Image (cartoon, rainbow, N blue to C red; front, side, top):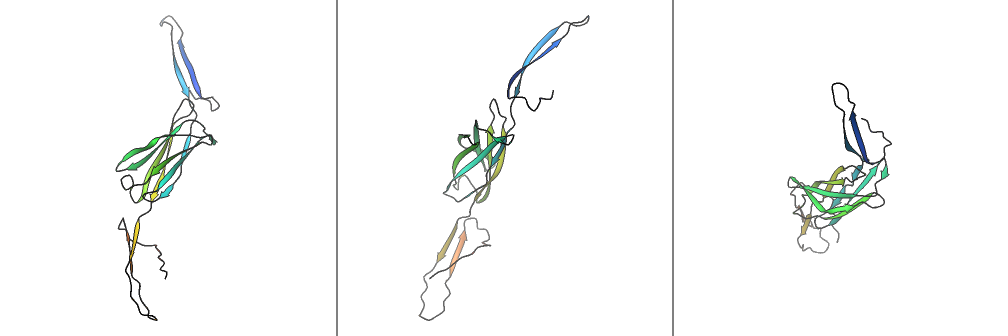
Length: 178
């Protein structure tokens, strides 16, 4: 049975009946057919640093229109497992759900972390999910030494930049001002 695309969400009773004949008795049965609207969840990419609290934002639509009811559960994939972030966030009148997430060294890695938003199905709308990236900037430290110089002399001013990830420090620019 193909459910017509203009069918309203809801619960419908489906009935089947066998007609009695010389070989078989009559019988009937019924069950429920639950029709839900499909949804699309779109999760935004986020960038932050350790110690930051960032907003995770998901937009829920159905047939290009905002879904204005229900909840979204946000997750982060860390240490090989999907971990829920906070309690499910309510979808607002614009079809948007937001939760806050504090970036720490115990719940993220440097650079890209996978995040997920899952719209929780209800009586009218079906579940949908979206994944994206929480990019955590690499904490860097710059250290300098005091330099003693005579007036009119040229001097090199050494400094050292280190990154927590110990990755190559390419594509960087440093400015030294006096």
